[in-house]
Length: 305
Ligand code: SF4
Image 1 (cartoon, rainbow, N blue to C red):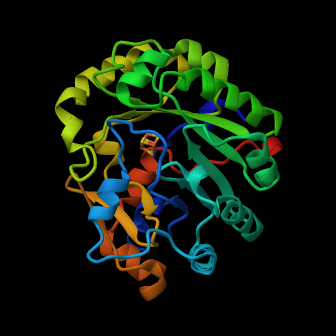
Image 2 (cartoon, rainbow, N blue to C red):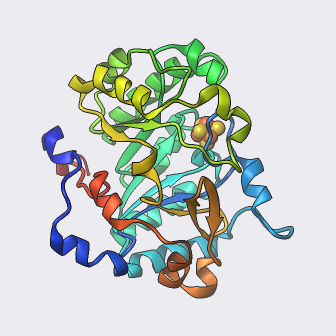
């Protein structure tokens, strides 16, 4: 499959008609808020998540509850699931969730900083995990350190983890957040080395209950973001500015609520287990057309699935 086939496509009138009842065909599940890094731009921090809870509450679902949600999602039309966080590899149930999702028939993906991709972890998910999306924002370990992404070795460690992932036959993707600290950098060496099937480039997104304290030092304008994109156009990034990202993801939090970033502040639904997938999703809403426009619907190359 060519890179072109994996790029965003235009929305047909027929697709537009189904927006109101659109099924959550692609879901991002933030299975934990725990992370071993402290990125200044983090969109889902442990502190922010805890502050969203009205009363003392478990911070994770039980295994039984998690498996039930996976089944409910599948029955509601979910075909692709991306496990994220927090750092999802810190969550002990992750391998079992990946296996169950794959056995249900979903495409399975993982967003990770790479630190948990040990040989034993990869062995436990081989055959069940289709793709790994690495979070790397800079060719420089030092820049990553300045952002809070790791402790001075993030780039080197992530690239070594990518070699282990590739040996297992999993697909590699790359996610990059552009902020004031890496705006002028050149990601070409990283993209050429990693050869991701998709390289997604995000404009840093304000989430006032998550990254507000760092916003002034990190924020960039739409024009500045565009200049980063133009400098990297030969590498064919999938581009997501603030407008594109807003409400175009279906996200579940660690306790099984849908979460949406409405008005730069996260809002949460009633737990899925209490009211069902579609009623809970309707509480927070999502922008199906923008999901299609940003290229959220795509197939992974068959030979590596
Ligand atoms: S690695 Fe991801 S989850 Fe962890 S702090 Fe950074 S952005 Fe947040």
